Image (cartoon, rainbow, N blue to C red; front, side, top):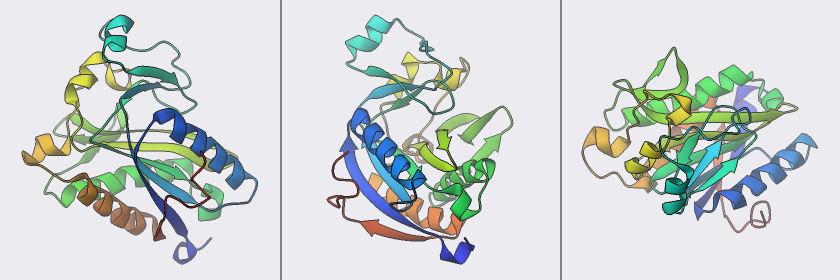
Length: 230
C-alpha cells in the first residue's frame, strides 16, 4: 500500500480495565488477519495493572506479591514481547491493530515509528526524547518515559506503546521495569515540572502518529460496533 493510501481509525476508549481492552485487541487482530475490519489505533488509560511479556511468566518484582496485592494491582500474563511493565491512570497507552504487510512495513520499522511518535510528541513540550542501545522505548536524560511490546501474527500487530504523562510513579517501584533493576522511570509532568492535560498529549500523539507513518487518521465514535463489545 503506498504511503499516501494508508489510513487508520482512532478510538479514544477513556479509562478501561486491562482485560476488556485485551479481549478487544485479540478480536480486532483476528478480524484483521482474516481480511475484515480496518486498521485501528486504540488509545486508553488503564486502571492499575502489571503485565508480563510472553517469555516472562514470573513477575520481576522489587517487593513481594503480597505487597502488590495490597495495592489492589492485578498481575496479568500477555502474549506481547518484553518483560514486566506497569499501566495506570495518567499513562497514555496506544495499541495498534495494523496489517504491516498492507502498510509495507517491517516490524522494526513499526517499532521505530512508535518510538518516533513519542519523541516528536515530547518535543511539543520542549523535551528531548531519545533511543538507547540497551533497550527499546523512549528515554529522557537516561530515564525511561515510554515502554513498548508487540504481538504480531500473520503480519497483524496488537499491543503497542505506553507513554508516561502523569501516572503514580510510586507504582513503578514495585517492579524492575522491563526486567532491568537499574532502570528509573520518568514522566512528561516530571520533566516539564508542570501539569499537562492528557487530552493534549492524545492530540499530539495522534497528529505525530499520522505524520510518522504517513497515514490519514480518522477519529471514530467509541460506541461504534467495531469496538463497543470487546
